[in-house]
Length: 393
Image (cartoon, rainbow, N blue to C red; front, side, top):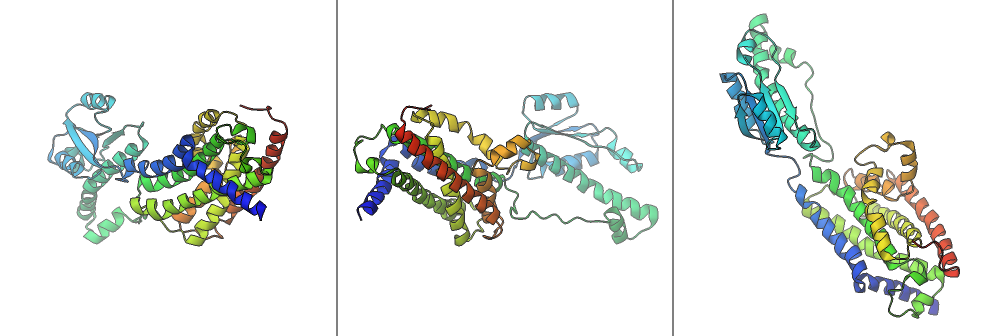
């Protein structure tokens, strides 16, 4: 009974530190909630709209003016200027007053009436990938919409076809395009869920390192002779980890039931699968964090070291760039980080509605990490308690 009481005391003591230590409170309480709410705010509109663009009308005909009106009525574009020379439009793009240009060539209407093919130039600002795609698609849609009836009319007049036959010849293989699991093609639906998982991982790692690994590095404690700090290594190790586990289970539930509902993200995961994800991801991350905490003597060092690793960890997870396209050494290195398996597992559950069996290979990898890092961390903790003063950063 005494051992159980001490073990529960270790858990409670560690959990209280989450709220009594200002540095840790900012990390595991304030930062997690603040980032979860603040990060999605810039992407509330989900898709790009009203991007400033310019049109260079070198034709000045009825057809070119119709193309300008069609572009102005497009939700994605905001035609801020119509120029009669290309130089002015290029200057506007160089000064980032516009992010796209459509160039209507000279004698476009006359050449179309003669049955010639006319090329309409579309230029986009390549430094903004999202704007580049939205502008190009919108301008191309306007041009295709304008040219469709002209092509059909040519077929009707030249071959004596019916309207239906002409439409069939113009577009013999109509394509039906459907976006699955992200119906509005929203950027927030794409990027935020992956970042939320990384927020959980990074705050666990930095928070654990800030609290200190071995007993002698927890110098911030006011009462060093507390029974919790003198308890056996296994009790301190598991008890502290369990405090983090319970705390972050609450955050995962808040993400699923509150943050996802607040920002209307796809939420298709069932409770059992999410619980299995938490039972795999959190132990792996906590064990990884404890191993890392044994290398740092000063709490500031851990924060400085791991903050700059957030973006590499995010890219290693493969959600924005396929892991198969990364250098081989980076693929092997990514296998050491829990987020590499946690991010695709979380996205599969919440966005695709994957079952427990379908993400089992990710969960197995996380459980292997939890076991490996757990054993390694315990061995290092015992060594550091016995041989203080070695290997501190």
